[in-house]
Length: 398
Length: 216
Image (cartoon, rainbow over all chains, first blue to last red; front, side, top):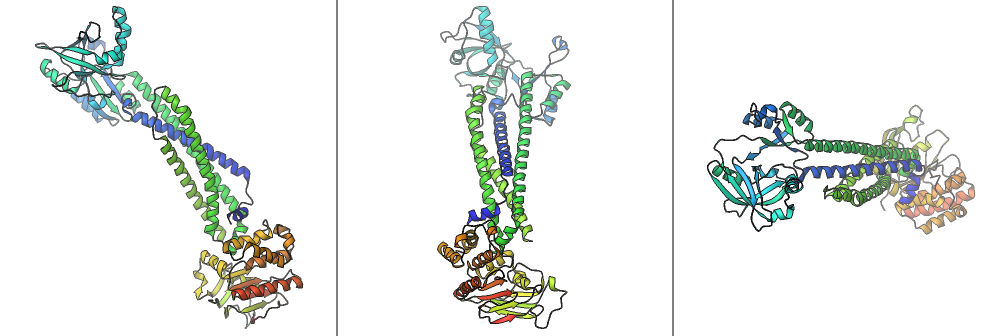
């Protein structure tokens, strides 16, 4: 029954218009799926813990000037300044770096594999949620050792600077992670030693970090009684607000790790490009759907007399509507399936390996997201065409 | 089997509003028809014969008065209600035949029969053979003569159960031999369906025992 009805309804079909609309829908669908998946990758990258410092978190400090050197201004942040930063609309969180108020030195434990050394250091701590290293970060007085996170650059400096110039052997990350370290805490009135162990290397925080609990404990025992104000702050800013942050940095004469800003700018730029791409993709899809809608209306109007005859011999308009919708929905479903398979294949076989090769983790919900977008498009197409065919048939009936 | 009732209550179609109607004319009067009555409308052109058929088949709704089918005013009918009637109760042969010119004879019958499943495929072929169109069975209707097309349109109207068969000048292009064949087929199908017939003609009435004649 359907093939005869199709013969009647589609007898004046124009293959060129169908092919053009199909190609348009296919290209639009490819562009849409690609841009949604890439945006999803960026979103997931931005939301990952790994990205705390690069996308929406930055460490700021005051610029050290000549006046700072001669003691005419301070690089400390006052409570008022911290409050002022908290009030900024684009800043979500402000956390201060706490510092040890006593001298810190570290040396090796004999027989743990490290060469003999002694180095003066400093300890700082930040709230756990800002730490970009996954590790057991708890400490109490009964703990076997104090966990320490070193900046990765620090190890590089030792291996490719100090070690080379002082004839010391180089130290690997693995060795440093298993060897114990003697921590020398040198207060003005009191000195002490405790065992420490490097539990991780931070890519982004250029500070020697210890747990807040240890810093509080050791400051109480060895630190000066003067309350020190923080000199470095950790800011979590809203996405896409790095322009405002940069302006604030200039206003308050603040210093910020330039690479963090640059990276965020690149990300924002990529985001904008993909968003523009997405908008174009949506426009292409809409245009191709409109192409289909217009084509279907043209077909119906050309078959107007036959539709009237069909109705006069007993065919309901609903039946004719179903035939039209079934046909074009199948076309759009096939387009969506081919586009989805193409996009997922390219994504999994080409883009994902390329991103992973460059150390960028990709989102893991790609197939689901791709299907959701494709199904949404198909539903939109069917609904739009349903309305359009219904209206046209109604007009023909009148 | 349940019969079918059609009532005209003071109906005047819009195109005939300004015409003066005779005393016995169906237009503006009350008229009742019930299956299996067989009636003929014999009148000259312009009197509203096709309009009469158009009203009964639901194709025309531009009229004053009331048309009651099976005790329901057709003003309440939706397009869906009319299509139900066109599949199960009222079958029509239109004056302009309303065939699908791009389909073959067999396909034109199948379009209707696929909807009703009234005849088997074999029966369709038999009917085509009976009206002398076997050699043209796969020919597109636009390539047929008017007489051949008329026979196809009549056969298509029979591809459904019906209580009222409406025929608008169905034999206008048929020779007497073909008319006789068609009339025989009609009689059989009318009996089988226990259906009535409303037929319009321009001149000679077909050889069917009509119960009465409608004057318009």
